[in-house]
Length: 424
Image (cartoon, rainbow, N blue to C red; front, top):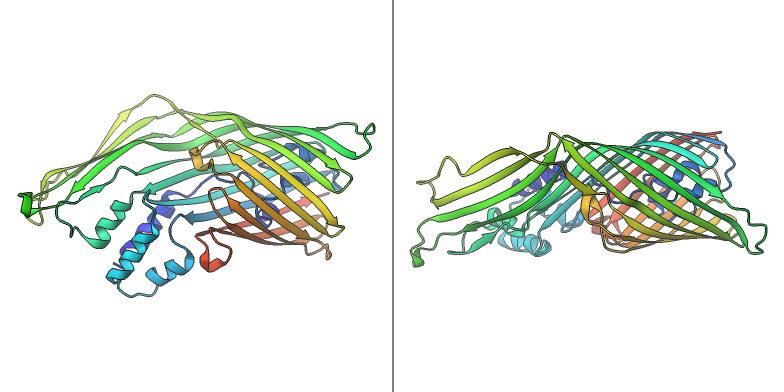
């Protein structure tokens, strides 16, 4: 039993690689818990407010070498619990099994992962173009589906429901063209800077899937009611495609007040969707066994997989409203805050609101230090730490973000981020 569940969780991780939750890739943002949307320079903006492209920048040109962001999380187990139950090599006791099941919500075990990569991006004043590898996926496994192999079918006549199975995912390439326009603010006394910006996105999908429907049940034996056989009946209907295309847009605005405050507003993935139209198929996975007994009667056709051609289908890109603020408290201390509200749960998005705060300390300019705290959203509470190496014409940023907990042991996931670029 110690072997089964870690293997099962590992399979979920492989299935969900590529989640697109937070749009931002840059490591500076990760270290500040994605709270710095009102204070980005150059290519730091990618994935959020294009209006910041017009902010004063000591560099006229930037070239991104690599900006990568990878994460994994789940809604049930933190690191301490995982280590306790799945890494000691001991067999699970009945109490261990019950504790594990108590940790899984009634809606099921939801596993998510993310991987985003930006290896080719250019910035010049007020303009930027970037090529970004994108993807998104989520898989939800019903709680009864996990309980059955852990406890066995020891409750005569019980019906195990499999209806909460769900999932969707995609992978592709985004080509982003961004521009910003600064307004003349000489007529205003306290407003130092005002700009608007837009990002147009052309998205090439390499592959996508979504669960159309899932239903099923396993009815256990019950000799007291003359149920001498177990019954299995279920079906999962999945749409898949090997390619598609889509468009989306981000709109943003930014204002700087009394040289200390910056406030930005962004609409992310406005009207964005992907139309999947290449090799579209409908895959129906069925489980049927009306008279199942062990070991005497095991039908050869318990599981069947039927594939049909299907019509094109669309998936909505995660749309969100973002309100961000930054305050230059001291010359070497920046305080940031951000509120984000999503409008879609598809492709890794979340309708849950998120609130974040961050700090950046740059007394030693060659070694900036960052931290941040995020609450809500898909990751729940999250704590970030980041450090940079600023050699003027070349920078290197590293960051770590916990998911679902402030301390590593209480975390239900993590994000690692890495950024390096040249600027002149």
